[in-house]
Image 1 (cartoon, rainbow, N blue to C red):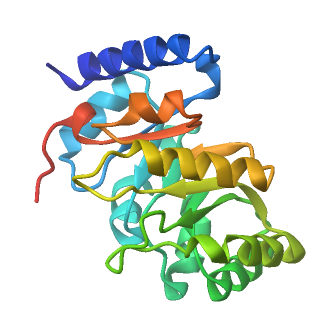
Image 2 (tube, rainbow, N blue to C red; image 1 turned 30 degrees about the vertical axis):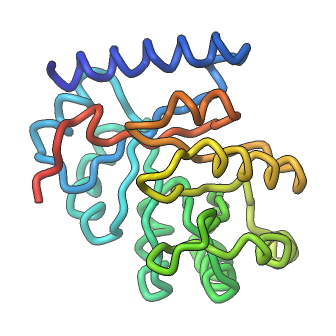
Length: 220
C-alpha cells in the first residue's frame, strides 16, 4: 500500500481501538515517526494531509524539516529520541514538543533555552519503564523528583512517555505508565508503536508513535 493508504488504514484501526475502549478518538494523536525515511515517503504523508511527525535526532530533523516549516505552517514536530544538552538550543528552535526529558541537567538546560527563545514547549518525562540499561529514560522511582523539579522551574510537563522492552508483552508496561500518570495527575501518555498501538490506546495512550506501519522499512 502507499503511504496515504497506510495512514488511512492506521487511522481506521485507531478509530476501532478507541471505540472498543469507550474513548473519544479526538483525544489520540498519531505521531508519524519519520526518522531514516526517504524524502518521497515524507512528501506523500504531507500531501495526504498529515502534519504531526516524530524525529529521533536533532541534526536529522533540522535537515528534513527546517525548510518545510516555512511551507507547512501547521506542522507539529515531536522530539522522541534522547536529547543531549549541547543540542538543546537547536531542539527548542525546531521542535514543538519534547518527549524525552529524563534528568535534572536537561530540565535546567531546557528551561534556560526556552526562556532565551521566548518559548514554552510542552514536555514529557521519558520513563525507562523496563529498567533496561541500554535505553534512555529516568528510573520509575525518579519520576516524582523530576516532576517536582520541572514544575518548580516552570516547565510545561504534559505527561509521560515510554518504550517497553522488545520481545515482551507491552501491556504490563503500558498499564504501569498509566498508573504513574494517574498518580501524578498527568493527562497525556505517549506510548504505543507500530506493533502495539491498539493495546496502548486501550490503556489510555494519548500519543502513539508509528513509523514502519506508515512508511515501510527504514532506509538505513
